[in-house]
Length: 217
Image (cartoon, rainbow, N blue to C red; front, side, top):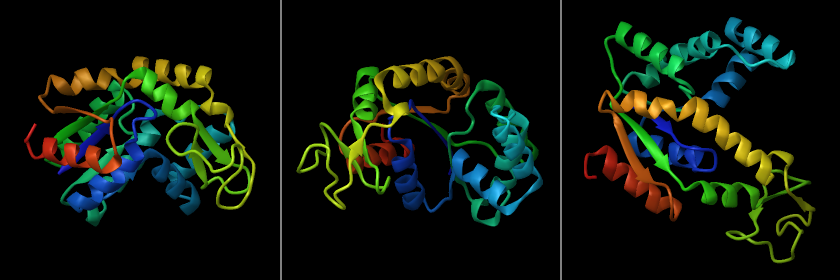
């Protein structure tokens, strides 16, 4: 299957992408991974992206699209892929359609993870990260440490990242509504959108997504 995964920040796209890709035996292709791989490998596209990023500028669509096209052409993506974080806007969605059409393939579904805005804010603004090891993540509601402000694993101080503050989260949501959400309507006209609730336990959402992708909505 060839799938595009969309949803607001805090919807759990990364987590669901990993599980869905494994269940469907297709590669999980995320924008972040594309950038890191191209930059670390010193590809021409990676050099271009790094130059923009070092200058504090957004990487142009054509660079991101070029990276995605190269990745989708790899042998492991021959029978499908799951795109996470791309396309990010309608112009990228249109470019993706052109690229796929050139290879005589098309998307099978656009999976829209739906989460109420207040829940998004609650999920992200409630995160607390360990200063000693950022992989140790807690939450003031869903995953509380035994001692407030102290990491259970290593005893490090827990803190709220600046980009996890409520004001920042709401600004990120504004960007999502303005730039990314319109691609849902774009793909809906093609009959590709499958919307599911992303509320509940991780395995429940994964099962819901798999049923929806199989057509058991």
